[in-house]
Image 1 (tube, rainbow, N blue to C red):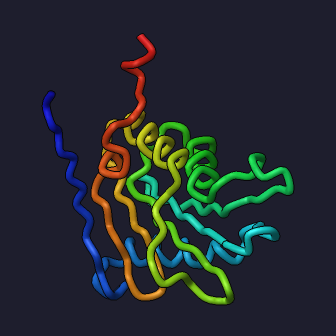
Image 2 (image 1 turned 135 degrees about the vertical axis):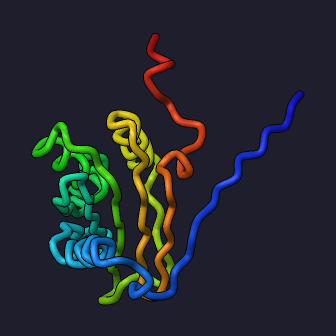
Length: 160
């Protein structure tokens, strides 16, 4: 037997003022997006904003459905829309935030497993790291590379 440790490094910030103007715009777009979420069942609105290499920012929100598995997370809505609208433009970063009980959440939420897989696939597709900003009321957690969120991931090598 061989033990293998997997270490994840994140960076925590206490203020949006610690970021450059592009990052602030991305973070704010994710916060604005929560207003457009369709979450009548959970009342847990999630907003995501994707920064593309051409400077475009694409927003997405969670979309719930009474048949629960039929909904879709904000991260995938934003990435799929960005990849559909700009299929050749790499994704540089994604910011994600949530709003519930009439306020932004206290602790940053990470993407679910399906969203992690899609973010890693997008990173692999464009051969460039995707920076992830997890945004809450008073804290922003930054992950420099999507594979940090899903270090043991399924990729094209398993399909050959």
